[in-house]
Image (cartoon, rainbow, N blue to C red):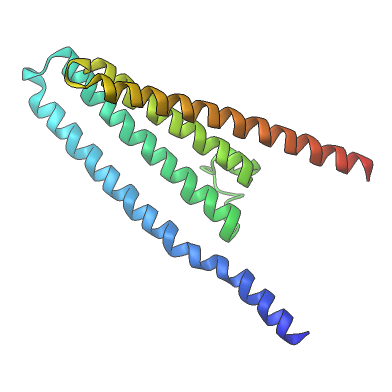
Length: 173
């Protein structure tokens, strides 16, 4: 019995091995913040010589960086809260609203939605720069985007069915 308790404690404690991974993602977020600032400064410096299309492509790149940063925040905060430990943010005025009702299923759907948004930005940038992008690349980007859309819809449907099943079980008890 004592061995079983030690085993269970060890398994439960092992969730803390994920903490360094989330810290690494925070470092990656810093890299994206640096890239954003560097690109923004270059845009401002080069502005007089840029066409409207070039500005739009650069701005789409900035939006892409922001979307990836948002994705990182969802993974860092949502993943830590879901899999490692609860964050004590109840009294914090800046607590994200979505954190109150986060679950592994909700997190997956939010991540899928963020990936679709990022893919949309990439696709739009490719279409804006179609003269310099091969048809094969455009085709694959559309296929990947469509695959992400279908995957997100299936995830959302699966989550809905699972939640209905859980509610039905709860109603029966």
